[in-house]
Length: 265
Ligand SMILES: [Zn+2]
Image (cartoon, rainbow, N blue to C red; front, side, top):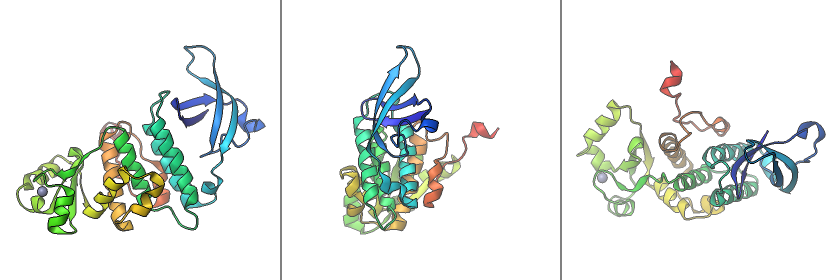
């Protein structure tokens, strides 16, 4: 069985007979390889596609030559396979993934920065219609840019369940009840710098390959932002609460994922 994200049919799986023994598809089914597939379906009702021919378009060999690039590409593929709809066109997602893989090849000499991953996650959140309410403080409704002007650099407390954040002064004073409610209901609260949040918004309007060049926050700040985006995905995007992302450990990133309650019994 081979699974791919396609331009016109979303995520599809197909049966590739004898592909291992005969190598009849060459490298066209290798990990991260972009290829053109010819599929057959026995009947309208048949669940499975049969892969008849596959031709390599771009092998992305540069990704496989470096451990961190490969780990990052594996993580992006894991994310994409969860988000992409099955047998349904998703041109935007396809382009995002194709551009991200090409960009990864170009990070020669250096490990891909976390800002790159965050840009990818931000775009997935946006695509899935789960763009959180991150423009303004949940308490005082002041926007990120206006807070920045008034207070300079500052920290945000993200309330994962509400997919929003509160500013430092709201956190100190009027909305302590939010915090207490959060804690008593087990709602996760995470901290992130406003500079990383500003990078988040910038990445929504920046092509994925240019995201690292436009990011201003530090790597440490982007690790915090990753925790926020990861938690938002787990809480708000269907499918992310069931299984952890396997590739995270290779990048030294920690997830907020915990086994769902029902599987603990
Ligand atoms: Zn506020």
